[in-house]
Length: 340
Ligand code: ATP
Ligand code: MG
Image 1 (cartoon, helix red, strand yellow):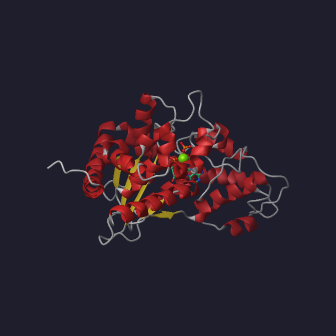
Image 2 (tube, rainbow, N blue to C red):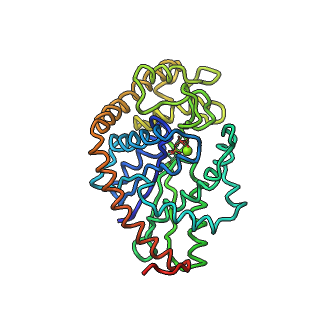
Image 3 (cartoon, rainbow, N blue to C red):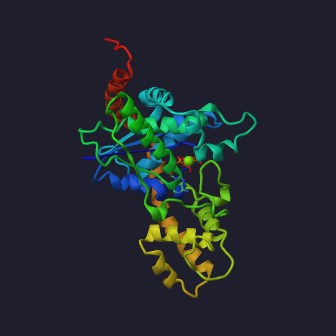
């Protein structure tokens, strides 16, 4: 079976609707057809300012939400990035193959570094995409061992990082011999970029959206409903799908379509002549119906922390075996002396 890998940062107290529709829903679906590796990327979360106790809590809350959404630890390998030391080790080696200017072209760094406080952006934030490349390539089976169709389900914001990952894999293979298969970004167009409810041209984001702009998976129903009712909409009253002229309504239609299975065209017809208010009201109900069971199952999973940690330990052991095999080949090829 082809392999798939993806990660999510424990940077907030909850995942949001953009994470769910853009990535996590695909994680769950791909388990049926793929050998899946999913990780909570805590090493990535420390690239920006953070609190250690909050990180520890958020890492468990993240894992609990993934289980609640349907990631099945019997079928998939669910683990915490820092438990598998090879991620950091491969990142160093790939970092030595990355040009400084090449890393400097990554737009996520430009966006995020502008928002860092008094200390300014860290070197870790700069090298973030290299660590991400390592996350992925550790699990790409070498060509000839079923390496075709290795997919990485992510949102549109990660496309550039996936390109860099492919470039680094090719460079490594060229310089040291075929080692990594080339991963492919898996980005379903309709949900590739869910936008901020208050700023409908910017992506919904754990670390930069305002509380009013983001729908959290673990949010109270009342607050969720209010935010959707107050979502920024566009001038005019017509409900039409038009990213340029009506980014607010278009975002709501995309969310509605993804959750209901109706096409955006169907929705335009269904709400022809109706006001924004009635669309928002129905959408709020749909969002609540989707997220409420996830919130309840998350609470349940968090209720048994020992069980949760056991699941993560098992995942780390399984991921660690694959990662160790990859690193053995990598160390040899780059010219390190074996430890014997
Ligand atoms: P942060 O602001 O801390 O970077 P984030 O909201 O961007 O948090 P990540 O953990 O960086 O979340 O990303 C997890 C996954 O969710 C990635 O695959 C990313 O592409 C996807 N994703 C994030 N935001 C959106 C969005 N607004 N629409 C669609 N997909 C998204
Ligand atoms: Mg992000």
